[in-house]
Image 1 (cartoon, helix red, strand yellow):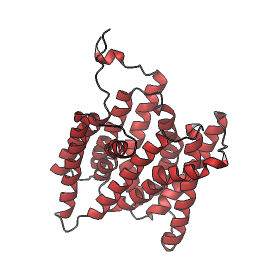
Image 2 (cartoon, helix red, strand yellow):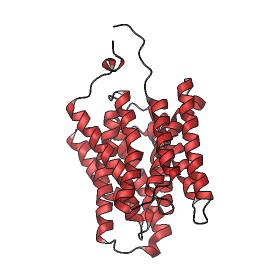
Image 3 (cartoon, helix red, strand yellow):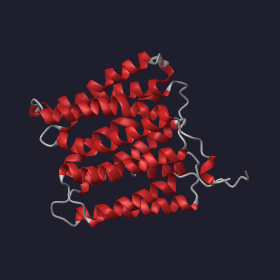
Image 4 (tube, one colour):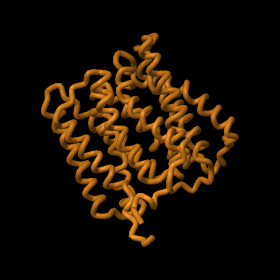
Length: 302
């Protein structure tokens, strides 16, 4: 049997949903960069979530998914929110003004690599030799970008480190979500994680950015709306809904294409200059993600 024929096929709806959310997430890196240029970043993020959250809630109502989570799971829910959303959204949006959108996308999608490492450390999920090579490739790519930032007087190594911390915590949160004892629909968990993160980000924006508040320019308003409807109301919910039933190859391709899209749309839309370190890091990261996530070839006979 040909190895690809053993893979479960995507329905047309799943395929188009996956393509759409990959495009939405990939394009979002330069759009976020554009949105936080001259506008307070935490406020940008909190406004996006405040608009997107009711739409996500409406989706649960229309899909007849219950909102209730037993009180015994509230502590677990809060922990999941901290690692899956709160740290990620705060650090990435604060780091984005320091970095090109493409470079931030590459660093942000080291998440699958960190997830593999956390799986080894905390969840007894051993890696094959090929996956360890992927981890090494990703490490080389990150070091190239960090070295490039450190070698320039205008470089922002702090921004690099912030996105790496965000990616590693999101990876841990992903592993924890997979092993959570909560017998609750995934979209219900996503709604309440988003709700708590929205409250925390709004408080941070009020405390640290209130003196910089202004009416956002029309272009920033469109960026906020894109994040609200495209990312928080659609892509995030669609990914969580599809994740359990997607073929591993499909999800791997999606994750690989997002940073590539982020890099090239940043160059196209924002005129960001790509250095050889960026090109090399893109290649290394795609190789790394494929090595870590691509399923092993089936050895079964037809």
